[in-house]
Image (cartoon, rainbow, N blue to C red; front, side, top):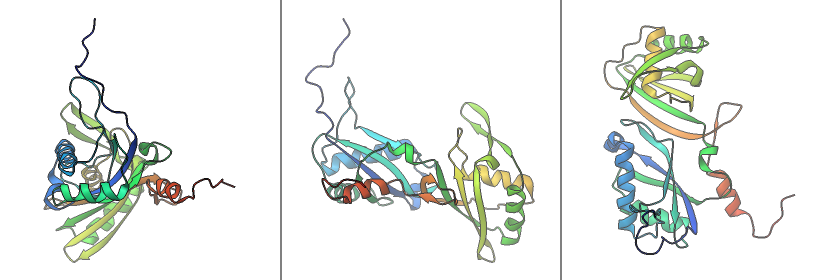
Length: 253
């Protein structure tokens, strides 16, 4: 007979809250595992009724979406949290934000409605700050990359080398100058497998033009969402807000 955990099963899930949070400053160097641990500690500190998984090692029921790579800041990270008792988005926002360390900042919370959150996210908009890079250099590399139909680069992973088609993932890219010695690259990238990261984009730009990046770049993810035809991204939490704002009992036309 298979072993069974002692005691009663955990309480059922009665509410789900979707959280958008930012990863700022020095905390951009946290790994995704570090962030997950910080959230689990923050939820305990906030005394929120988080639902637990079943089994011999119960853990908080958190569902993550498209975590930014280590070293990248972000204004648009997402996690869905399951609760075993009724909660409100405002309660979760205030309690969790106060319990998390500075640099992991809750941007907004909504009650989960309708489709799964990963189904609403298929692209990211990044801003790459490039100290030491002149706009003239970047202004040559970006059109050269966009003119290609495909550009594959290699990335070294713990499982060996992997190839990623950067051009196939890049939807659009534009560059501008912050000042005479710092260029800014804005780029929208589709979510692919394997994922195309900001450093992959820079590797591709260096492959099509002479582009020297003398100091580490400063990437920040500004948005995640569903890619529209015009190249912008739809807010993945907008349908949840719309549903919450609809009067009870109102029928759609």
